Image 1: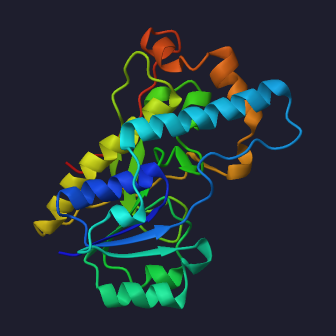
Image 2 (image 1 turned 180 degrees about the vertical axis):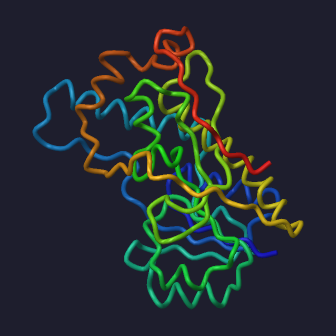
Length: 267
């Protein structure tokens, strides 16, 4: 059974690809080259916001390198059919033909821009997206950040859902959430969520390989689609100045209340 993974180029994206390759469950890989992993702070910020911005993305890089290591396109074996593309090639006729020729049985996407209907129409029935956030509550962009901003770190997790033309809106087959431990910062939890979904993904692929269909659960109209423009560097004041990145500790100590998401599980 041929598994195709379409993913981004950041450490968390390539970690999942390497995890699948390591257990013999990756046949094809398409990597979309993403934006700089450590962006420069925008002009005009106050000193407090500039410092928080630099700290936030520096610590994200450190956390991802600690949890995932460093991988590049060249680290994948010659037995893996692979292509590396720019965002403007994602929905091109060339990529469409590449996928048709590859003939995948299972497709997963993670960390790429939205696929066009032309691409979606050629994908097999077992085609899924891995969303870095708990849908339907946190759809869209930067959705592992917002649970921390709303002081609900136990709502930071991942969603696997059927691919369709809606933003993170397909029927859900599985939620993955990490265990929270004292000392976890915002980036530790995000990384642990990726580690957890990578393990869960292996189980899901093996279920499908056994010929079983995993029924999805339709998403309700509640929740929110977060846009990139919703996030501002000033939001980091709550994470770092109000809480000094100890939101998990304060949550585990019972200071922030407790509200548990109703999770969907494939196994």
